[in-house]
Amino acid sequence: MDPYGIIQEFYLKSDPLYECLISHSEKVVQKALSCAKRLDVDHSFIREAALLHDIGIYLTCAPKIGCYGNLPYIFHGYLGMGILQQKGLYRHSQVCLRHVGVGLSIEDIHALNLPLPKIDMQPESLEEMIICYADKFFSKSDNHVEKSLDQIQWELSRYNQKSVEKFMNWHHCFGDDI
Image (cartoon, rainbow, N blue to C red; front, side, top):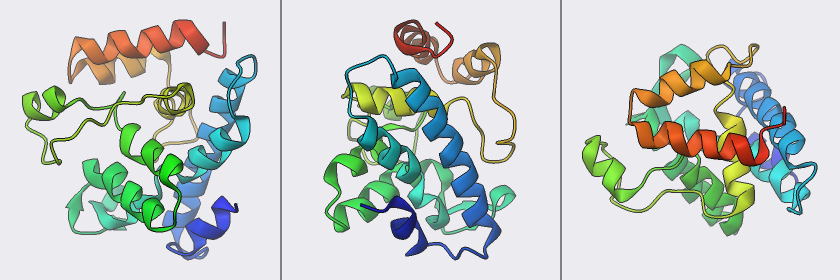
């Protein structure tokens, strides 16, 4: 399976959004594989899924990074799931769906009044958790700088303390600086 080839079905290599997506995704791949190096997980899947986790961003409205779609950015995971399911990549599609924030429960969607389908969007497999964890360290609007733990915790705390606790539990399990 060629993740770059799949991405190029939806993004022009000459478009700055392509470079934004690839740059961000490659940083997530590096971080995720660093976290996974001592774990019994599917490293090939982590590489592929981390490259594809944000494939749905072009369908959303996020002008700061070059996305001019019709839906709010928070939909990018759900939309990416649909794209990859149509390609028969069900396992990869679940990473798209479940990587937003630290994953979204139905209760989170209700409590935060998010305009998303009322379905569970929380990482289930260790590979999904690792990719979700690694993704928190890089922003697409400034993906040249890795965020600090303090910055990530502050960003997650704007939603709820449960998200911070979940992230820190992941950090204690597979943070690459441990």
